[in-house]
Length: 293
Image (cartoon, rainbow, N blue to C red):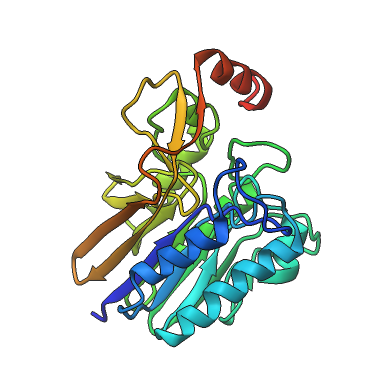
């Protein structure tokens, strides 16, 4: 089997005006540092698994595209992007197509430009399927029936070496109350695992939690990339939410029957907290932005 090396990034949160995220983080600097951290390596894929943009503007997507795609090409890789809850389908599609802009991608059928941004492309015997778990205007995630059927039909046949699925909201539980309130619908997450179980899917790449998490579910590795923009605290009080001024990513290698995930995180400022929400603030955010009962 041909090995596959992936640079997995997520949550770049770019804005058109280059403004600082939460008034603290220079997102372009964080992305540049993340890429520089592994610039001595070669890759087959560079994946940004959602929340590419923070403001949903076409300019923000162009900024990320122009930073990532040439860098990836210089290292022998093609790029893959997925929709996140901060992204906008119209601007994303106008700039990044179905998420695989430098491949011969096939998009989820339909003519409505507001349909989910989902695609498939195959190269060198590896198939990459991008799903769209975003809900316009919401922070939590779902997977519509059409995407599930799209996935089932694609996985009815196997790729030469295997398949990688990219989706923003992970089909695994979060570490905190806030992130769990903004997680993928539990039924949709279970459906996703049931669909990929027993197929040639080797790996599901996700983001959203801003934490490095790898969990095997149904025999498939689900790996969540730490955020490029900030890193969330995983083991603080789960009723609160906070993040530090740091960047991260993962280098992943699939080789024969092995999946190796090596995450990296680097803190930029020792004492700088990007944000901290106490339990009362978290409860209000959950009430305003969490999944309706």
